[in-house]
Length: 496
Image (cartoon, rainbow, N blue to C red):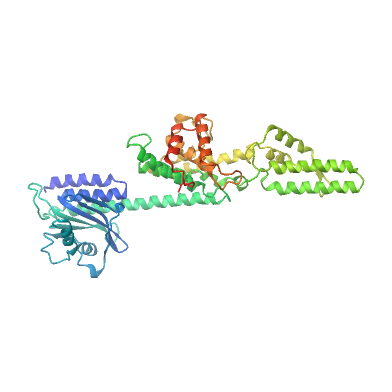
């Protein structure tokens, strides 16, 4: 190989290595390019883990074999022990040496029982072999990350079996093995950083969910729905389609799902966990009713009330108490019920200081009069503020280009395409597909959740009816609602 062609080949292969962002794809590219460079008919790539070489990829052109780890390679690992030094791949890894074999049937340095048995079974003829340790030199000591075992080089001109020549003159092949090792090490390091970031984000999300006695699995459920739905879309739509989600797009959306509720970190727990309309004030209201009942009995005994007056006031008080007990639980209130509640403001009792005070304070009447749910308008505004806070928190994070969309996707999950959402009333042209997906899945999880104290879980059928109704109203993306229902990723109930 000429020096110029060697440089060109190195450049070509380096570009191929650097173009891979997925670990499994990089391993395949390394083996494929090294086989191509050396005109090898077969190759095996091992990765060093826990003191042993583990098979990751096996390829044989003549036999049309291609097996990767995910395909279930059922071969035991090669132990890196002094007693196993007769194995050529173990030797290359332990010694960090390149091994060149002209013919495995004539070489006495190593035990080639495995290749010979393989030949007997398949009819293949193992001959030449080149074994390259994948070594990185980024630290003080060289670190062997794996081994490439190339076999049966073919003369590119004649197509006949050949031997591996000119490995070191110029040293293109060893140089590329080193470049492949460094690229692999860099990708592993990058993946470790990403995993650390993911785990930190997940820990933050878990901490937020743990602040609530309820709603403890919301973030993980939404994230699981997102991951499974993006996988469904990846399979359903071809590369280049606006709904195709490749690995990077899926990962970025999953990160947005993990962080979408991070703003709840400052939402007051008494609002976050408000299971009835009065929250922590219900017991105090009950005590006031009880005190007033005792005071009525005292007034009757003191002669300030006749028997009929006492019974009438007692019945009025009991009706009021029952109305409070009925409406304090989350339910839809009619105008008639709300009007009845407003009249309760006239009920009074005398406190321990002799002051006449209302049994139901103005804020109690306001809370009990909530038409739907448990939150007053003011409390709802505080709850909704978590979305804006999510945006402000994520704005302060130094997201890499890899996660550049997380901020906008996460902070828009309560926006509707007709502009009636919050906090920014964004419309369809400002809401990307990813935000629309996150909104739909967030609503579905909330509807079907069984851990909400203010409502019973809706069935999937009822939940999809609500989603479709919202889509008909122009709030949600109809196509995405339909695709989510068709995907069946929701059938497990928790996204898992």
